[in-house]
Image (spheres, rainbow, N blue to C red):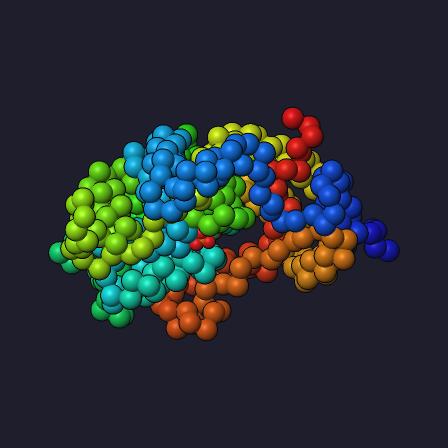
Length: 403
Ligand SMILES: *Cc1c(COP(=O)(O)O)cnc(C)c1O
């Protein structure tokens, strides 16, 4: 808009809600109504493998698919070992225990994450310590974390102690948000400096690589999720990744009730968990993993379309993978310009009316009643991004008929 004095108003950035909806429609038009945020695709051997489970009766804790699924995961990620469990939260819970997190410890997690990250810490009897995110990755900001820890901790006998609470800070949990990898080299350096164990929340990042190496293979342990909305699903499911054979053995042991191997005795040597993934779910998982390369290809194509189309829309930008990453583009992200943040709910409502499912960022951890009093650093970037972020439809099926 040209003002009388010839100057351009800030209105050049004005966001046209109809233009946003039109762009969404243009890119997703081949999808049937309504357009879901993320629908699973079962176009491979799912039926055949599930039928095999039902025909043979191996549906639960014994059967070939759990072993096969674990082997496929270990091979694809290069992790060395993968242990299949009932869901991603359980994977994170056990990974934290094996990383040495004890009741009364603190664990650094991002403020902007799915609640499971914080819950897994709480299950250990530990306290989430909330850290801010980097706008370039949407995950933990290693530089800000370094400056913060420098102020608030002392490292004594190899243990990082929070000077304010007196509690050990035992671990840090980088979460690869919507599939986009955290700057892992920097994060690992900070963790080493302060003697923190790294447990990656790679729940959303199967198929995402940092400098050519799969996410979830950088820390001591990692958790992946195979929930119905993730890039690969087993209905419900998760996996623990690790390079360490002893940690892998322990992970298998404690997720299978800590039962000692014996032909008939039921003997257990510690409080274990019944977290094993059933064979039925692993059967679906094997069929899904076979299709992962196809899912990844389609998702990249979809992200490219969005990037191109939203390049023509004012007042927002399409979030792209960081330079060092090859992301799985699990859930695509629009970021409204700061001055357009008030339009978020108008867009969500307008898209909903058109049958296009969008979603805002998660409620930030420090805003949830059970985590309100957790220790935390300045969280201004998380607060800013959470107000401006919109997830848009990202199913691998959107380009189904183009392959
Ligand atoms: C999905 C998810 C989890 C938990 O996975 P479930 O399988 O649903 O328990 C954990 N962390 C993040 C960031 C997730 O997105």
